[in-house]
Image 1 (cartoon, rainbow, N blue to C red):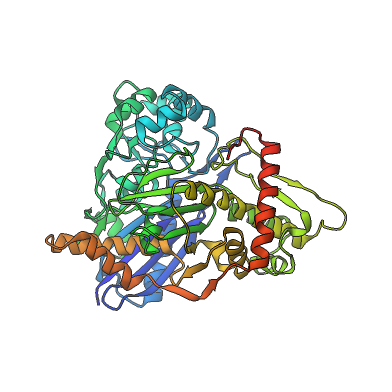
Image 2 (cartoon, rainbow, N blue to C red; image 1 turned 45 degrees about the vertical axis):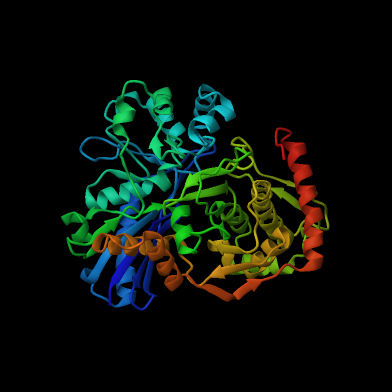
Length: 505
């Protein structure tokens, strides 16, 4: 029995899975929540220390459930929410709360940086993608302008998963996939882009603070004594490079070759596919990130999915079971109730200052069930907007593999199939990002022990062993509902463009 652990540090909490690489099974899982600091000005922050506390708690839960000796775990792989900004001083102390991917307080700084690059086309030409509000780059500029004294102490810039790797190993490094979401990496060459960095800071401080970049199949080190003691692990336990949560979820859903599309119904909504070549999108809203298996991962992200449905759920004082019951009582179209679900602003389409709104209410359709259906439909329409952008780039969706909390709702899965017009299926493993971290840890460890292996064949074999579809969740589009949703989606787009004329299809 050879054991590995995968860790996922998300917005709402941390998850851990422990797997047996010989049997190809998950032995134990654990989770612990994270608080969130938020404000109406778009601020979304967390304290890095909360992640460590949650990691330790979730790890011990997983070990206990697995019924194993933690010292038998051979290696760890870490997945983390993308785009966060962790500022460290020379001693490794965190200088400020971590601004998260969903933070839109830095929209003005992002606009200024994009303009300095020459606008949308300038950003695409320089970096291979458009720097969006929420990427790390504008957070760094915001930090420099608002906290000049702390800026003078800046020694290292890390992403959330990089910070967990630092806590585990003491190594200050980054990995191409997650680094491509900073807005500081040229995704074509996989190198930090000095021109963009110097637009933020030309003193050299930021350039020197960027960590060394590592390829995805490598181990970065072994555990520090403090981390080993808190987790109950051996000092020789290895840590792989890890990656961003979307990159790890791609591995954990078997999305490592062309032809598969993964959609996450999480706090945010993501849609991504794998490519062997760097992705030259006609639309700046498609981010041509690097993958965490040394390819590329064209990705679209919307910022309001379960974050939006949770807002309605809390408003109605319902638990998730009650919310899903109400959802099952509503018909397609929610009786005409329509929502623009931009509680956190929006990235695709790019509307960082947008706010949520409800439309078409009357005395007959203003029901709890229709409110639930309207928020689910609107979140799903946002992802269809992304699917349409993908299709324009030649990426079709023959089958959608669903992940994230929203995928556990049978009614929502049917809505996705009807809105997208293609089959939908979930995976057996619910925590695909954490599983991806464990698979990557196996991949890196086996390559370290036997470098002569073909890396691509090895990863394919590992994914075939661990990634399986849950056929009980498979749903096909309902022909009548699909036709209705084609019409409802057009109404949504018309409403969207009426409220925000700057939105172009």
